[in-house]
Image (cartoon, rainbow, N blue to C red; front, side, top):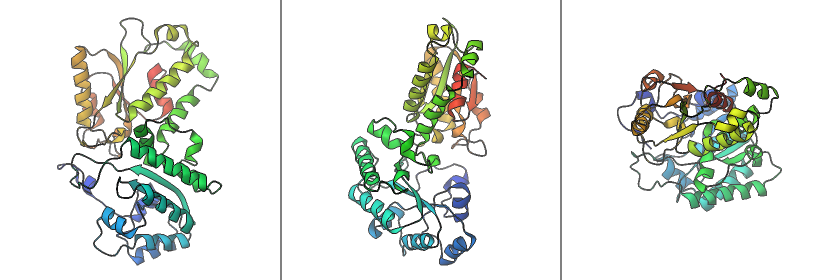
Amino acid sequence: MNQLPPGLRPSLYIRDDDYLLSYMYGNFITLTNLTHSDIEKIIKTGLSPLYISVHSLDKGIRRKLFGLKKDDRGPDYLKILDKAGIETHIQIVLVPGINDGLSLINTLRELEGVYKNILSIGIVPVGITGYNKNIEIGAVNQDKAKETIKIVDEFRSCTKGIKLSGNTCVSDEFFLLAGNNFPSKKYYGDYYQIENGIGKSRDFLEEVKNFFKPVKLDNLLQDCTLKGIPSTGRKKILIITSEYGLAVIRNALDIIYKNISGKNDKLREHGIPVNILAIKNRFLGGNIKITGLLSGKDIIDGILQLTAVAKTHNFKNIIVPDCILNSDFLTIDGYTARDIKKTVQGIRFIPEKGPDMVKAILDLQ
């Protein structure tokens, strides 16, 4: 589906099935556009593991989801690769009313029963932008999220003892949509699909927790000049995130508060004046609520609106996660970090890692 607005950089409109990019960078491919010669090359050169979007193994459902008008060789090619020892990571994009419920159960059972070299299965909800024109595609709601979590939990329980079982997971969005807490780190097995948003939030929160384990932190806090920890009138910290990111940042702040309580008199007395600004993705619209797809314009507009309402710019630091930038340091709508920093003073980009967040909040770097 083409769900992007017009006028973006050309590379965003490319929908490829490049198995080299799958092997090198973890791009998901469908196998539907490959030839038998391509499959032979993959096997001959031992390109493993590959990342494959399956969605379903039912011919009718696959035809609908992939929009195929020719023979679907995807499942056949997957079997050939599997028998040749090529390992794969499988993605299922869940579309309510099409490949959910019983269809998902059947897909999981067949993947587990027929294929021997699947390393992980990740289920993610379909993303729908405001530019989607396919009326058959609907968003995952709370009930569907809960149902899907239950289906995957039952599958894991029934296949317990098989390594694939512990690496079959739903993405973080399902827990957010269901209103559930993120499961423990054990749920995510080897975190094979963390870049696909599966376990990323739990990993981030674990990093925040682990930051407070070293004994040296006590000395670090005692020596802290507390430039970011104000008494009355001192400037605050603003964290930029997305609608989905809001719950994760709140959880991270709870961990930080619990760990610094009692370790520093000034911290205990004044607390940490952190504000969170959850930016709504107006650029893409729909149900796109992850941080990495926030546009530069939405972020700039959000900051300016907030400071206009407050009638003053009273933030010492405005923390923006660098996951909004691609490898060319551009947002999805072509803004640079410099463009965003021009908005107001104090904007700083940090890696989307727990320790970097803690240090930025406590002003320890």
